[in-house]
Image 1: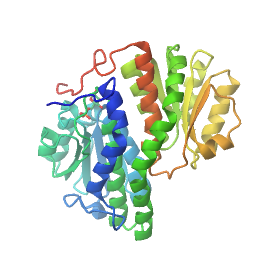
Image 2: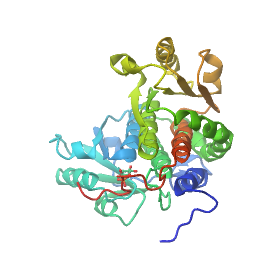
Image 3: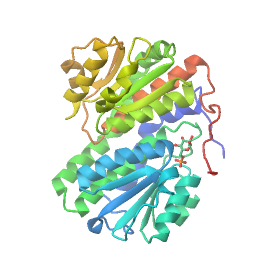
Image 4: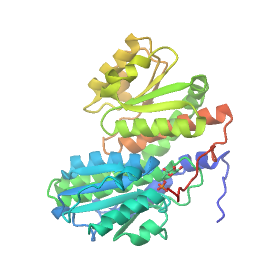
Length: 368
Ligand code: G6P
């Protein structure tokens, strides 16, 4: 397989920058650009009749599944049971035939994810696979394949596969919402319109924030611990931000639901642990800002990742504020993924780590 870095220093950087183009390509598989509706792709899974959906995956794929849970529950009123595959496979989860199972895996070969798939298959559930490698074992054993069409991902830390998984899960949740009579045709079109606009916004954001993030990563590289906070779909994103940072810069980072701050991590707040807050101006914004105030009151340094409305609405002093354009909540996770990817990338470059091949990690984990 021949893939080169082009003008980029690392595959990870190349993969971050190709997201707008690749997502646009992936979307064209799920979205009819002319009519502005979702193409019907999930024949093997009858969303209309499902009582609930089980999702399982590992690592970054698990975190995209967690964003998917918020979408399936909000747009399709479909309850989602989700767990990391290493727990899912052994938990003796009671399952029934009015459920379906969805497995998310870039490689399609992750041992725990495959074992979870086989467990659900034995229980007679219809199986969907959100995969990048269409010839993979997970794809072959599924009843329905939802390709993410990201192309080969070489960097061990997943970037474009994450946002493509999100794009596919967004499209599937909208499709489920229509099938279940929750979304009207007009609502579907509105959501799809946002998805179609997304690649253009992604390019704009990548250019807009790059210099600031590169600068900020120098400051970030001085710290040993970082806390990431978010609410709603920004909560899995906070965990993804922390995962990216620890994977490639080796800075200890934790992602927390902002509301859980007072149940533990607040004890750690001081000037030595910056808190990165992901908060678009959505229905959770005020709550997250009050968590930020709790951090500020204890001398914590804040890196605020928000949008234009959010920046205008908050008066708190921060170490840095990264301002993204205002976007609809259905595309916010993909847009807000960009600063957290770039922040991890530039911090790792600044620290001189092996960005594409971080120590102790493998791209594909085919053993338990
Ligand atoms: C490894 C990789 C991660 C990936 C995870 C799941 O830990 O380093 O980037 O998210 O496996 O891999 P999969 O191929 O199943 O998505």
